[in-house]
Length: 176
Length: 182
Image (cartoon, rainbow over all chains, first blue to last red; front, side, top):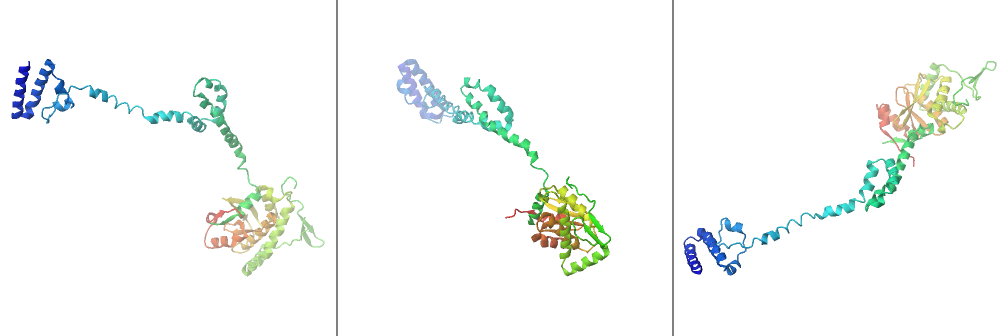
């Protein structure tokens, strides 16, 4: 096999001398097959780190090195997707919004009266869950029910003015 | 009178023996024809002295106050209007009503005697009357169509100038704005 290898090597050199661009890859492939078969690949495989895709394409390089290390790419590929999923903002937002949204949104969208009733019945179940204490917060928001009480009393505000109030108003008129 | 409504009964006391006419408050009054009164008022307006008419208005205001059981400032506008319109009617000065134009209080005096062209006589009368009723110095400025806007006396001259320049009541009210007294 070594004689055959020598012959092939010399043939490869000849071919490189004539048309190095076209024949190089084929000869290299044949040479590589011989090496793997004879078990003498150690020296030739050391300086081949380019990917096979490059070799199969235009291959402008002379003596395109074989690519015995495809495993190097898979080890890097898992590394790249990992930084994407974490998306630290989504991790931070639950911790921030889990406590505040109940305070801010509920008094606006839900009637304060309905809110003020629920905490009394929901409160016993709340401690069983880890984050539930924040659901009880509407109890502290319940005082927003007071404006509703005032709103029911407001019809008294636009009461009929007295003559003195009308007089005061008209006497306060000044040119713009 | 105790129920807040004006009672016109017995308002005048006619003393035929002495030839006197008095109101129930004791004030002596004289009944004049409209023609005579208008001539007198027109002359006063030309001279720029409508003090007598303002004084007459104050006398009417005293009659109104005599019929009120509480200060006018705490009464409803309807209550004050009821008494004021009754008194003006009894003195033959026409039919008095209130109107509100935004923040402005407007007095309408329909079927009043034709005294002077600019209604300055009626304005002086109403000014004196409501100054007495409110216990404050007020002016009633003619704004056409037998209507008078009630304003502070310091503003009266300006508002009168607007009306003389052609501004109607809505325009005049639009040129005024309420300002809190300092």
